Length: 273
Image (tube, rainbow, N blue to C red; front, side, top):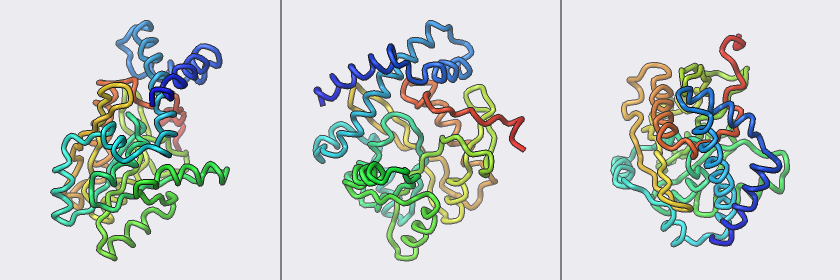
């Protein structure tokens, strides 16, 4: 890991100072999100983000070879008893996650819990890299399903009485044609996909948010926060609203840990018709 972080520092220098990868996008996202911060403060956050982004890239590669002991040492769960309680109650869970902290290390969750862990993904056009991504994510027992097959997989497990913990990344930018819900998020009108909300209600799953803390370089802790337990009684989009609020709190507390290079706000509400 120490060697990988040396490489990460080298890549950071090239990415930030020479290539300037998406720096305009990152800074504009930060400026629109934190209107009360000065440009000097935003530049500091920007630089910390690029350091973290490079670290996550190499940490994700390390997932191919990391040992179980090292994974459990570097990725800690603050309140595992919450998940264990739902397992004993025979409740299925949706982990409504985001591109925050090291989201790729959520693939370590099977090391901590007896649930069958699943996740949805968009297949890559390059078969070699698509296969490599699946190998990395499935190494410790996660099962990956393409997004359009995910709901059927969840129902199949439920019919077989196999308890599942399904983590879904919910902060992608929706396509114009996608079903979406608009929220004021980070001082901007923001579109959120409604898939996780609908899946949770149709399959009656507990919905939980994993709040990340980066203790130090290469060491993360997550705390599970309940978004909703009584799914069937909730109004439309209430789960998404709670998710967005928890994610915004996490970003406000540690802004460098979110994926600012993503063109999150390319879809504008006034053009969504």
